[in-house]
Image (tube, rainbow, N blue to C red):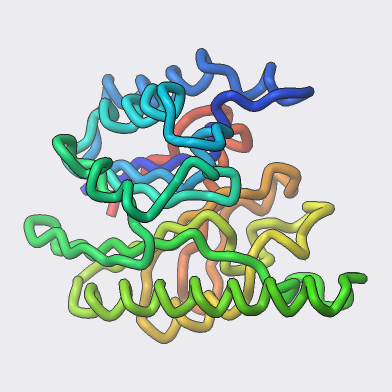
Length: 241
C-alpha cells in the first residue's frame, strides 16, 4: 500500500513568495504521481489564498481531483479562507475527494483508517511567548474545538489495522524546530490524543521556515512528517505501509 502526501500549495500567493509557489511547481508536484500511482493521496491544507470559493479555487481542487490515486483526502489550512463547511458535500461529488473536518474514514480494502482536521496552536511550543492574554485564550479555545473534532474522527477508525491522521498544524515541536514562528505552528495536546488512540502516522504542513533536518520524527511511538511542498522540493512524500 502506497501513500503520497503533500500540502501548502498557496496558489495565488502574492509578494516575495509568488516565485516559489508557482502553478508550474504545483502541477509538477501532482503530475509526478502519473508515473507511479498510489493507493491514497493526502493533502494537508493551504490550497489557495483566495478569500472565496471562486474559479481559482476550483482550478486548484481540479489538481487534487486528478492526482493518480484510488482515494483522495484533504484538510484545510489557516489560509484556506474560501472554505465553508457546507462545501464538503460539493467537494466530494462527483469526484472522490473527501475534505476532512473531524471525520474519520475506514478503507476496508486497505484496512486503513484516515482521520483529519485543521488543528490549531496554543503557544505550547513556545509557552513563554510574549502574547496578550486575550489572544492566548482565543488560541486555546480554538485548539480545544479542533481537538474535539479530531477525537471524533479517531473514534470512528479505532479498529483499523493502520491509523493515519492528516492535519495542517503540527502536533509536535519536533518537526518544526527552528521556525521563528514556532509558537503558532501547532499544539502538543494533539500529540497526547494521537498517542492515546494508537495512531501510526501523522502528516502536517504549515511550517515553511523550520530546519531541513527535522521534517520527520518519531514522537511517543507516532511517526510524524512535515510535508509542506516547498520543504520537499515540490515532490510528494511517498510512503509504503
